[in-house]
Image (tube, rainbow, N blue to C red; front, side, top):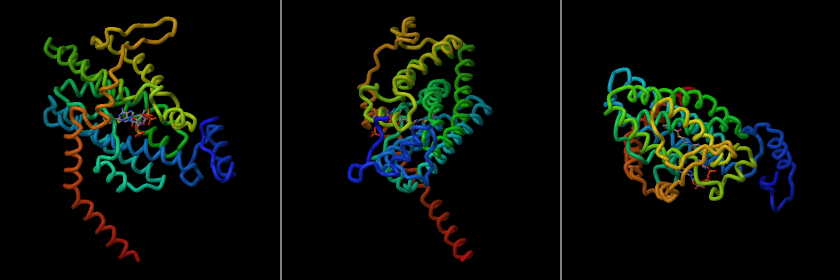
Length: 320
Ligand code: BYC
């Protein structure tokens, strides 16, 4: 293993050797175990970004709860959005085991200094977008997150097991929405295809920049936080989508997509990476709106936090 940090000043410490041994043997790192600062920082970065993504990710779908086409669809969508809040909470809790508080992570999000997934900065224009988000966005999330169940940091891996089970249910409900639309009128079929056209490329960008421009990948893979590179997962995702698109009867908006028999993989057309950079830099179609909504929700919730803190203080006083 070449990518593990070594303490510069003190040479190879016993703790570092033990850590390296745990990683090499595919064992798990628990919060009580010694870990290099850079490993801890990388996990706080990725896990807090992941938690923020779940919380911001509630917004594009919540936008459709009041407009879902039936009571059943409304109940399913509400349950899905609640699941996402739950995922955010598991992830914030898991990140807290690394020594950062949830308040600090929230402050970073509110201040606009924390990242969250680029995908949630796109608008949801029609009901079919709920199908496309479930099929493509949750599909991409599953591809990315199933390997995270084996992440070397145990609390992250454990949180991911439960999250992935729920994500696979989310993906199926998205697929089913699109299938229903594709079996409907020509207008409904058009609506489904339009949603797939708009969400396809941004969902491929969820996996992050190409490997040669991914500064964190090699080290995270050395530490077994990430098990596969961004491009490997993107490739796997497209391979999964193609037969599903055929089953749905939708086309994927990539005229250059073709099976490469030699590589035994799909060749993907060029991705417009400038779009990902723009969205990550805060200049996507809905970045400002998402952040404004999150700040308002935080301010509106101040009384709940104050009440909970007052109640906890009262109970602590009573118990003393
Ligand atoms: N968007 O070196 P790289 C969900 C940043 S929510 C924004 O490849 P890394 C759902 C990256 O952070 C699913 N930023 O980084 C919820 C880094 O910046 P910093 C969310 C991105 O970490 C509701 C820089 O670019 N999933 O499922 O090795 C409804 C260089 O990138 C993006 C997760 O968060 C992006 N797309 O790999 C429905 C999964 N891509 O931090 C569904 C956990 C890259 O150095 N996260 N950046 O300033 C990961 O697996 C990894 O963090 C990534 C990036 C693959 C995303």
